[in-house]
Image: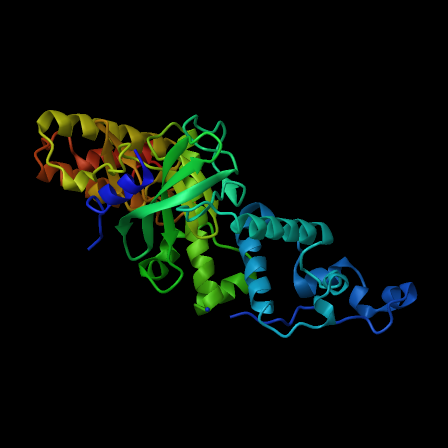
Length: 385
């Protein structure tokens, strides 16, 4: 089916749900660049002094790589608005503390040059080049259906869903050499004020960032802080999808993440029709029973790994091929590390059991209290007190 046809059909299937930094840490140039001057300069008194003032550039990177990368890119965008000086030359950049190394800077400039060159030759009808060579990629092995070459273009076919936190677009990625293509769901988190900014504290308990400057930006809701929160949620959902995919749970394959944009497997048909949400359906008793069984099995696997969805409802479950697919997972909760974890788990159970009971599932099957106790036990937390 052509891209034009997909665009036309998508319009009838779309769903809808009813920024500051300072530059204080830029190093000033040495008045005397001799080796003696460098050795005697009090600013180079030792690693302890550097770490005390600027923070260890290698610290905390295991947990915060995504945020550190975003922080650096934001500072570069901010500094780009200032008047250029001699320190903005190739030589001057090498003296900035905490900035890009020469190798990293060279790679960045090479990628930028390649992108600018490629942009001039973007084929007609394409919206952008494939972003496969950027950001984070999903777990190996990559699915056979996925276009993983860089000589590919993305066509934006329309909006699948709009919400307060993000918009989900349908993208067709096409390999130029062969014409092979795949459909992807592109979730773009909003960086302005939205609902997630008002409910992030509880979900993020147990996975707070330790970079004080970033935390100040988040707590102060600066422009940088708001963008950082949006990227934090995108990174969290990408990591959650990858983890659940590796556990064998029914989730869309996480293709890649670039900044606040998350690309995943499109769950739907080849003509661009998205799989319906459970909330849109009225299953008969046999279908209800089957769907409930598959859902509770997924919840047991989550609990056995110390997890719960965190915002589970009939709106966050797709029905595809007679099976339930878990979606919208940025708030995946560690029920062991998060003090409110058991409460989130109990709420997830209550939400879905209420929906199934309302739609005709017998009470003896959808017993919320019994299921909650079983999941709490599976998570190794013991009886609720």
